[in-house]
Length: 542
Picture (cartoon, one colour):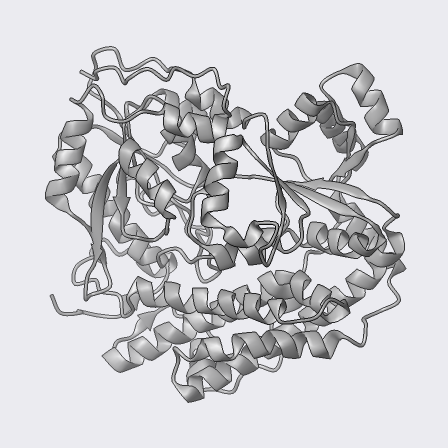
């Protein structure tokens, strides 16, 4: 069907248009977006890997994640602008930067890098009470709590269930300390940026420049100017922060953190390393051991930590298969430790009661709407994702099944109601509660904690797979054994369309097959090798 008007570029452009899907197309294939962003990430990783050890490399590691995301954002916008121009279509509610990147307007002299990409050191409310409460949670007992407060063996800069379980299992005395508080102290003590600033920015741009070859030369040059414009204040601020952290970080600092990509954690760990400091990171969300994204994982997760705690031995084994650069002789060596199992997944692995005779209820947890600030790797553009979600809802309804959508709580909705509000019931309860009332789950995005949590349960799971997430071979085999996988094709019109007969067959089969997958496969990965969940074959759903 021919395009009948401007293409809605955002959810804001969709709002109030009941007929927006009539003739809907998207000017760009998602795979082009994905490949472009991955090339930017690979460019940063290659640039950092080529640098000798020293302050320039340290600064590039600290800012590399943000640099890749800044480049990805402007590249993402430029790619859409070029595609829309070539197709002679108008993008409704397109970002202001489309015109400057295409050469139709001057490039603004300043951007928002310092505010958007460098964490601010805002005051924390009731910080002391929160520190004590989280220290008590990590300790799990009065004796260890006293030791953690008075003579800690490590400082926890963030807080997640796997970390808590590991602290209690190992008996470590860990005191919680806000990373933001360290950042405020570092900025107060900083003498200012280091002369290495320019060299670090040049090195990162050297890695990013060739990766912009997916754009026309003139557009690539303007994107590079926009990236450098935003990267300069970012790198300057980060250099000053590193100098401050070097002054406030004590020797032999032992740090624990859930994610090493969080700016204050990354900065403190990098500054503490020359003084004998060590960072132990903890798996957060489940995807790390499954995805085939070696450069993304290297940039985000492997460049800073000395050790990584995974939920269990199976998670360690799978992580090693997908990330050879983490091996002792690899580019980013890290010590991998099997933890005590993630409590979130342990709870999911316990058997849950089923519907007891009523019509099976389908739960559809949808992924986050991100606007122009994308994930790494990128998600589907918001209108394309919404179109896919509506297609899935329509297919479930056509099968005669009641369906509820579990919307992601962190979506960028521009202050508007969720776009599925009023179209389908929205279940806004915590995922564990919504899961307990579901008999069957459907996902279209597998790189989420909810997806891995569902795979640990005794519930049938359908994955509508458009290839958004790349899994390594061993993980793909496990997913294919556990899920009913329904292919979704990316058409020439840019839409993502599920295979309707395959989805109908999956819905019917999932509700009639008593042995449709073994949740113990994933319970062993995420809940740990000694989990208490029910690993028996699935019960029949009537």
